[in-house]
Image (cartoon, rainbow, N blue to C red; front, side, top):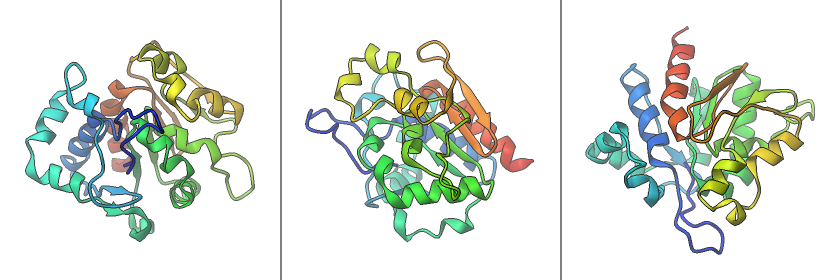
Length: 220
């Protein structure tokens, strides 16, 4: 999760998009997996306030909000740099705009994703989370996304909610520029793209099917 709650100097509140945290949490924990929340700064990781209001709430967010254990976990995230991620089987990165300001340029997060990918452990990323892939290079010096099928939040989706001009960079443009085969569907539609260890989802609606795909991958 991101530790950032503001979109640059715009003053607009942000953080993690709630259903992209809540859906995978329940889908994975109910399948018997332990889920650990982490963020660059640890402690309370901000939730995007807009994602806590209708029409963006879901059955998963309602359940999470009323679940004291889940809420405690989100308010007491582990500090990312203090986690030995070699002991984990998979990584799931929820979206939200906050991560563009911290995780996308966090050297530890970048190394962690590369290490998961190169050891063929699943890396699932939804909505804006694939923006973190922009600067990740493999051990051979190639960009991780070069020639890889993936998706993520579209320019058209950012523009529809009038936020594209507030962002540090465009996920779609940057990943295409690094050689990614960017695959999208209609705005806000569920869309999951898998290519090797990398599993990506386009929009908030993609969080449940992406988590289900990860659950199936871990059970295989």
